[in-house]
Length: 476
Image (cartoon, rainbow, N blue to C red; front, side, top):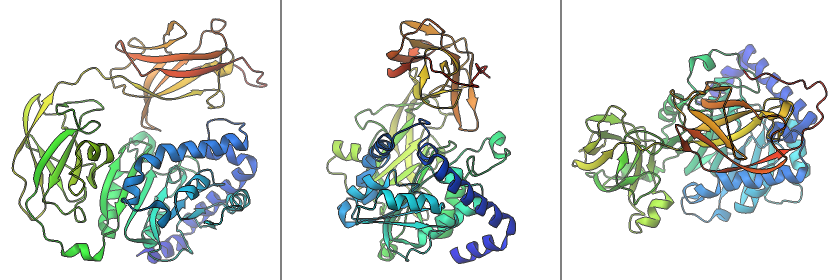
């Protein structure tokens, strides 16, 4: 199937031209400012800062999931494939964790620079690709295939699909394919022009359809309908097909983030129920086939597989059981609710009772500060870099300039704009820092929504800089 899709892409002259243009674009970006195009937090960064951001990215995205990605195997015994490596920002710290790392990129110039920068490593190999495959890597060779912050820049959905199919080819039976795509489904984004920076979406529905075609087990899909949709597929082992099904039984439940919290809120960021289940073969289970019925409403889990580490620590005898995470339907009412696990062509679990409670006011989370001048993270006390956009998790459709404030340096600042940005499937807050009222230095800030403050965040305020041709942008 993978060769047919690649053949079709090559025969489509329009797609072929756009993939060639994507390659040219990234070659030019590698020459112009590779560090910034890969790590867009600061326009001017030293190589040390750039490399440190790679270590931080691995610490954020790989290490917390290491037990799940390795499936409890020794990382040094595993082969890891990184799709979209750039100049090796994450490749060096990955090479310190895994026994063998292969890394690919559509840009030959990025690959050339990565080879030069990481020439001292003897367990890393780099490869240039077409943007629609991972050739010339061998079949069923890798234990883990991983891609992050890459497919969101690909302007052709079929090229994303083709690359994932080819990634499946090189994955060992029992191995994991984990990748991030843009999962936004807002019509305003879907109809906007796409290029090699603002690429196509590949949302949850596409992931699930592809998994069915491949015969993949969908372990998890997190962040559906957002720019950061993370999917994990497992390649079945041949022997797992003979395992017998038994009757599932819910052994334990808790809130997804904390196994000791047994009451599950009806709405908000914590409205996720975790179930620990016996009687289901973890090799056969996945979120494409299993269903959970909550109060008579059937929903698909976002995770089905090996128990997550924070639950395993709380339930030490549960390592061989199946772990599920599922959202609470918004149409339910607070109270005791019946839950059961539905297994295709087999008996469902006995009914199990869970207490659903009213949600408490949720605190927001500040994801990032950006100045509107050059979209960098450097914020200045006055001038064009004092006009900021703040991306926030936890706001909703009721959020507006009347009920949102920024608490900074003893002041509560009123935004110029609060709203939903469909291009990144996130809420944002735009405001102008008060000129002449703030001093350079480190300040603690919090976003308040209906009087509930976010977790404190340290923000560095820099002196006003000299920005030729900068002007003073207006807030949209």
